[in-house]
Length: 505
Image 1 (cartoon, rainbow, N blue to C red):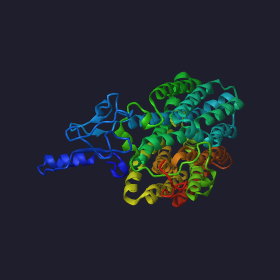
Image 2: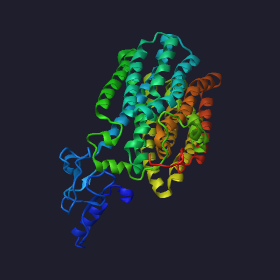
Image 3: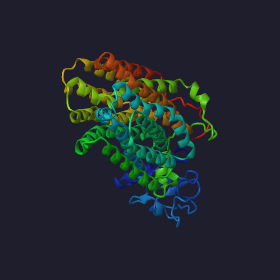
């Protein structure tokens, strides 16, 4: 339960006192359902707000969060004692962001399964196809900071809706490509439009999820991305088989994004206070215990604090190195399986789903584990211990792959590696929400820019290594890169705000 200090809503005393009363201990204290917090909760004055069966207490009809009548029951959920319980709007926000993450990776990864068909259609070699795959990540990295800044300044609802609409149209538009250069342009524009997704989602998470649940919520959202990665190879392979053409798959995936955009725009609001279904109890629950951070003029990007932060630079470096390794799973893996083990494209697409299933489990468990460790160890090691250790273990799992003899063995080790890497993703987002203040989107975008620069470099680099040597050289390079990413996490400290704290965000 949130603390009652500093005027934060606290419903615990009511439950504690009712338990004492019901178990024969008795109590003369009033049954309190909350503490007035500067107009955030209902009630008059600054004292306790009486329970419906308690004494005193009036409702504030001037607060828009209480219905037109000023009655608590017009807007708040209550138990049998009349205690205001938090509404569940934040859970709906989590569902929308998770579905957005599914679409993000579904649209991004579907091209990896279509690579053989696209290469055959347009007569492209591995290096040229590597440029097509890398064009997305290059644009994605370049637009991270501008997209994150726009989300901070002009509203997350508008920015995320526009982004999903645009990339859905471009996904469908991929079917209109006529050659190498049109593919390069479409994928580059696609990268621009997807750039806002995770920085803006992180900003939404900072506003909508309580501090104690952030890593878990972030894990669920990133799990959605892995689910999209799981669905993309299987669905794309299936659709290509059904239609005997790669183009219809892109059109259908684009249509799904248009549906999400309409529903999200109609339902979502930028802050809990703006949402008509979010009651005061939920608002106080979300705001309780939030770390303080200094605000800055809305039109400025805080370059100096960004450049001074060692932890932020280590975030940038780990994402650069980690993405160079991880992106193999969503670009070259189906091709690797076909060439190394001579299996058909449909089977390769199904095999390529499996490591991302391991990543899904890692996202969920990692968010839960990080929140638990943070409560026990504090922000410093609670946030950094899991991603540090798991990167080293993942490197070992990838290093085994060149010595496997069957596709099932290779996929098993890559699945373990994906599980271990994704155990730390919840901590990554939570770090920015803990330290970013009013610039969560901007700071996360800055690190994501470096991460996706690594993603842009990786496809042509790994494709070159495979063409010049063999696929084992590419896999060993991935193992070294992810181990170096683990070293970076040793210096990441979530107790140090990127901007010095002076006022509550």
